[in-house]
Image 1 (cartoon, rainbow, N blue to C red):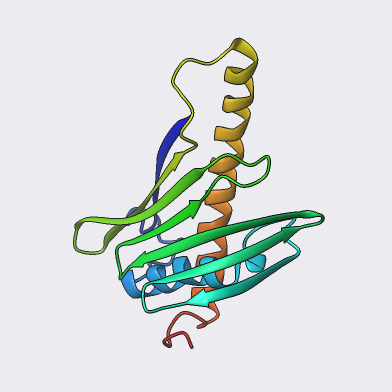
Image 2: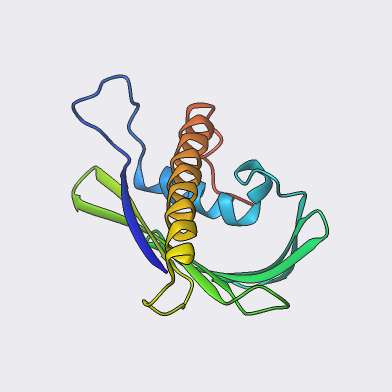
Length: 160
């Protein structure tokens, strides 16, 4: 299943939504990778197994379920989550890409790909619709948390 959607970050017509800078948005997306327990419901722990300048290898624990993934960073542009196939979990990818069609007009494009074929059964199609809805809600919540952290001043200084 492939699923893509776009979330508008700065809404010029709505004075109730404080605008974010590209740097604040970027720091929030990086923080989601480095401290996902702030963002992901049901995630018990996240251990960083390896770190380099532009990626981290993580181990995520959801109860008894353990998932390892690799997160790559394209500075101020894209965060790519890559989950290799492991145990009963198929390979999948998530790209979070910052788009700025004009100065200050920020969006995040979320691209999901589970590498399954386009031909699915009626039952699989039903579950795919459920997953799309869950992904959308999780991504809206990610932006909500980033806004909250920015409002608290937590995204104004470089991360350590």
